Image 1 (cartoon, rainbow, N blue to C red):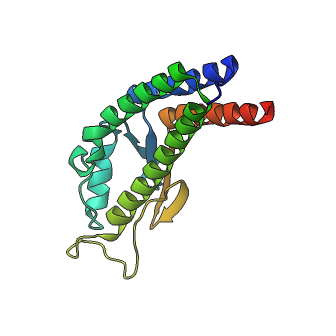
Image 2: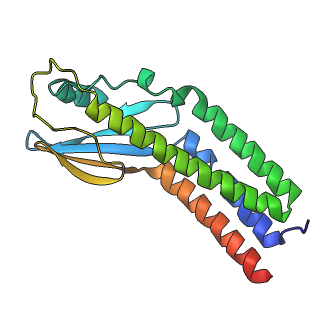
Length: 189
């Protein structure tokens, strides 16, 4: 199998290195604004923990019967850091191998990882927003409180936002580098 060009090997290595900041930066954010919280409440999701106004969000969500948000509801936190480490290791191996199949394999791996994360976040949001305590103080018949996967959504008097944070933007940059490398590889044919 043919080797990739030196420039594409560098792009592959740079894409692999964009996985490293996932250990040190928040990957996702969920924010809520309401008249009683004009400054907003914000929750940051990291590779292995949560930060921000998690306690205040739990206090508000309690009234509508949502479950308590805590690290224990994210089993991903126990293995995601190891999975990311394995992806970095594979990426470095693909860089050292330097064959075309390694370039395409890493792009496939990054793409599948991104899709899996989005599916997992949608599943979590759906369960969190639909599986409500029937004894909750506030009930609106037919209303679910699923946060948006990406973007804004009105939930009663709260405006909710969900979207990528610093770490995810860096990861998307890495995916962009991989797409560029594949584009340059195909153009070189």
